[in-house]
Image (cartoon, rainbow, N blue to C red):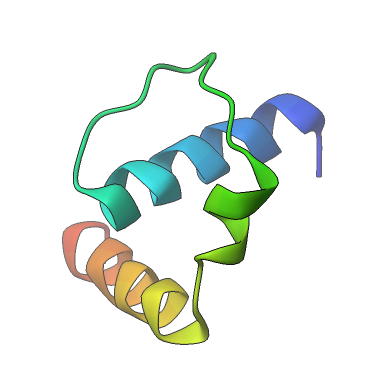
Length: 53
């Protein structure tokens, strides 16, 4: 996956995960990333599926 695409997906996920809008140039700490759970990723993929069927 290209770095720009990876970053866009990460920012989209983190915005969903944290309930706020991050800019495209947002950075996330290791601590932020370690808070991600499999359940959170599952909720996000289900959400994306519902809005982009």
